[in-house]
Length: 196
Image (cartoon, rainbow, N blue to C red; front, side, top):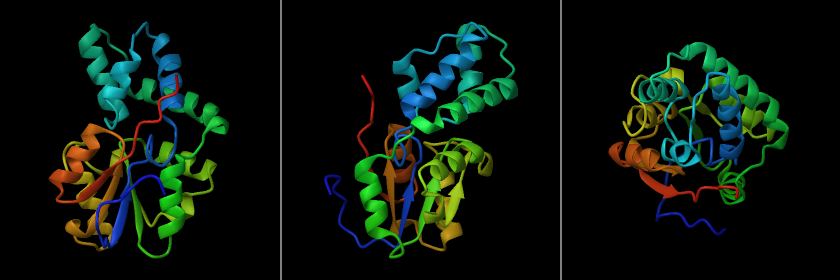
């Protein structure tokens, strides 16, 4: 496997979803563009990747502040989600992470720890036939402090019944790596799957 892991052993694997398990970031960006153009909002691609790991609602609030807009957060979240669902047939897994999932499945418990909604995470994993591999899903609505705060990772470890220091986190963003470190967990950086 070409994604090397830090020395273990680990009692659980915690995975970010978008950009880590699923190569969904380009599709999420397309969904964002479609949803935001309805409100005349600009979301440059470099900013989209820099903000990877932030909950959808937080991004809309930040864009409103940044651009002096008054986009209704819930409505834009719903539109973006709807556009993303339409793009799901194009979704693919991140090969190196998928190899680790296949290799460690049933040996250690798995959790997803995501800044996306439960509907988005469930749809992505279901589209790839991976949903049943995960014992726990911790999604945006399950915690109050987003990455880089460790809350979501600590919640996943607690739900799995595994001490934080025995968890290995798979992440593709700086915010996620910072959150894992703050939780006292080892991590492996998944290279971002940016399409040209």
